[in-house]
Structures are given as C-alpha cells and as structure tokens.
Length: 388
Image (cartoon, rainbow, N blue to C red; front, side, top):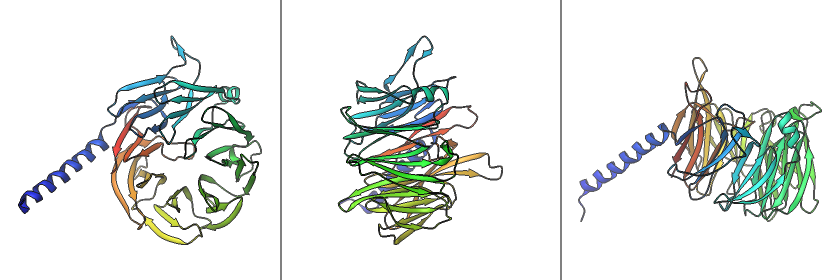
C-alpha cells in the first residue's frame, strides 16, 4: 500500500507542475503577428490566424499545427502585389472545412488547404473603396450550411450549403452580427452604420421556407445575439447596452430584463441564457425569464462569452488605473452553480471585433486569443492556453 506521505508529495508535484504550466502559457505567446483580424481552432488543436501582412492593410490567413509549425497559408499575389485581402475566417464545428471571406470572394477550404469552392463577393467594389466595417463567416452546428456577411456603406449576406449551393441572400442596413441555423439566418443591425443615420437596432430572420420576420428597437445600442433551436421553436437572445437583455421566439418578444443596464454579450449554454454586463456581472436566465443565478467577478470590464460543451468561459477586457493606458485580459471559467473561477490574466490590449468583443476561440480545453504586446507597435502575440 502506498504510504500517505508519498501520495501527498505526488499531489503537490502535480499542482506545482500545473501552476508552472499555467504561468508559462500565460506569459509566452505562441507566435507574433501583425494586427489580428480573427482566430479559429480545429478540434485537433490546429490554429487559424488571420492577421495583417506587415506594413500593409492586407489580411492574410495561415494555419499552424498545435506545436507551432506552419502548415499552409493563403497568398493572393506575388512580388509584393496583393490581389485580395482576407477579412474573416472560421473553422466548421466538425473541423472539416474553413469558411473564408475576402474583399473579393466567399471561399470554402478543406482542412488540408484544398479549395473546395469559391463565389464572388458582390460587395467587393465597396469593400475596396470604402473599407469593411464588419465581416463574418458562420456555420450551423451540424456544419451543413455556411453564411457569409459583410458591411461597408451597405450590408450583404449569403447562405450556402456546404457543397456551394446558394440558399439565401439579401441586403440590409448596417449588419454587425449574424448567426445561421438549419432553418435560416439571423441578423443584428446597428443603425449607426445604416444610410438613414437613425439611432437604434433591428433583429431580422430570413428563413429557408420564407418565414421571415423583423423586430425594431428604436433606442437600442446592439451588442450581440445568439440562437438556440429547440423542438418548441427557435429562440434569439439579444444583448443591448441600453435596453438590457431580450428573448425572442419566432419573431415575438417573450421578455426583457434590466432595461438601462449595459449588456455586452449573450450566449446560450445547456438551455440557459448567460448575459454578461460591463460591471463584471453575468446573469443566468431560464427560457421563461427566471433569474437562476448571478455570477460576479471582481472587476468591471468589456466581456466576451465563449461557450463550449464542457465549460463556458468569460473573458474580460479591463483598463488599469491610475493612467487608464494599460489593459489586461482576465480569463474565468463559469459553471451552472453560479461560480466564476479566475484561471489567469494576460497584460496587453486584446484583438477585438467591431463591438470590442475579444477575438478568441475555445475548443476541447484549448483557448486561443491575441494580445497587443507592450512597446511593440501593431505587434500581437497569439497565446494558446489550456483550460481543463
């Protein structure tokens, strides 16, 4: 029988090694790149990095192995001439494909870098002349459909089957959020980016079966949406920095909570709604609007929620006193009992999207995010952190 003191020594050794690994993973970047546009993970740990080519405003895409080896990348020119620019990329949930949107094209690549198909981006001329305000690629949970969206002075969206068959397309005003399900696409409009200039927001649904609807929020300040499809219908959770959190079902508002509270992100996780505010508070609601728990973190900051099968993560972008010029990213895990457990911090300004959500991805215990390093102009460190 193993002696008790031997067991204690082994346990202490494991804890020490784990602590050392955490410190190592939070202190050393995986690689250094230009300004990060987006990051995405394959289920086996391969990493997709979309970042600016040095000394240009051109976006490039590279895929790395978990140990840092460059596997393949996209190039659109030679001898210093760039013919296209990557705006956004995302790995499908099953890990078999990457959806890529550039200023010129929508593209689907296989995992090994083989181009499966491409389509012309109808917003190409505006994206070159005006510059993109927002761009995204989203897959359905079953990886059967893919949606592409972009915003310049106008917005477009297209939905395809994974083999490239077009299913839906249209134009809108100032899209800054998009989700796709097996029944259609859901869009979040920010009227600050519309031609009308009217303040407010709108949530729209375009269905494959033409079951379209829209809801207007005249004084809204939109931040995020998430979609949950159930046997009883499809729910849309909407986070707003002026109107609180709202739940919508099949085009009808079911309830609204905390009008006047700035909710910055929202996510469904195991049938519950996690709604994150800028004060360090995450409220957890049931679908019928009951407050189930309140998860409080020590600091106020801009939150980003990352749901995954085993955990839901909270990332907080926090400005540091006294000069308010330094930033830190705190990483928390959360559970259904209302606990937030801090697992580490990164000092620096994180890469983010239009709404200042932190650019990051989380799969199978692996978190990837990018932070601008102190004293390095437009240089970002890409960090890979394991959160078991």
